Length: 360
Image (cartoon, rainbow, N blue to C red; front, side, top):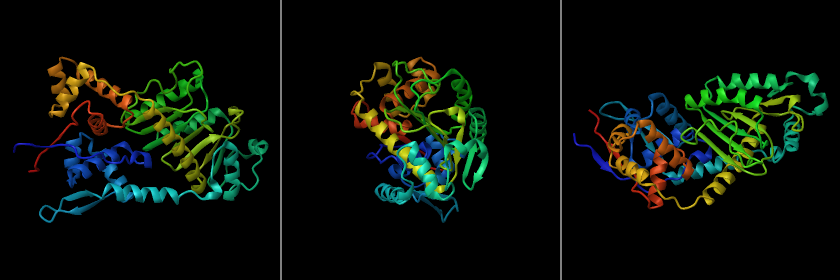
């Protein structure tokens, strides 16, 4: 059967800003733009592993962004997206009603206040923490040293975590922290874990830091932002770690699993992330493609794979990946689908088409 080329439709609001993974965002955009699809068709067309496609669809179903119905002829489940405007409004309302005003957090001081308001730490003077090692209240645990904290971070990173949020207040990362973090970051990136990192601009203008070994792209994103209020790690929006005393990291970290306080910490991260992303987009100059970049985008838009495009351009498939990652980084997008939309909206390239094959 001859493939039918369907051009990309209008831009679809990103679901990533509302906490969904880039894979879920990509699948949602595909369903909205091209209509109902089976899980298998989505995996083939998007080049996603079956596991990640299933996880993305589970995310969309959980937040009400997509639903599956059984095909009367084949009993195969067919996925359909809800209208993008409806989904975004639903997510916006859910976010608005998530955070209890008692737990509003803007600084480390507010964290202590929120913990007290939660009732899990009615009296929490920091000088008493050394005597409270371990889980000393429901949803609250104290790790009394940086070494124990690093072990706990490694333990959490080694689980089936899907998303990690990280804020760092330091303008320079010490070598010991870099050595501890680097293998964890790489291992999570290789598993497709979505990692978001917020850091202040380096004091000396040198961009080399603990996250420098990763490349902005589908699963890893890093923005710089001034005025980051506290150091924070969040795993799967279920568990957060932050310093017990921001002035002395050797005093260890608090691990928080209380829903209200967690929601407030995530809301804090999201506010700073959205602000940093907006600053990043505003600071981007109008993009101009090099001749090589333009040739590659044109070939991919015509339906070439990375391999065949590389053969045409007489470069390696690894070079194709590097060029696309560079473009995603420059435009601040999460995946190739969004890259096509961005290039099209900037009128520097025709958005790619997706080859739709009938299923046998």
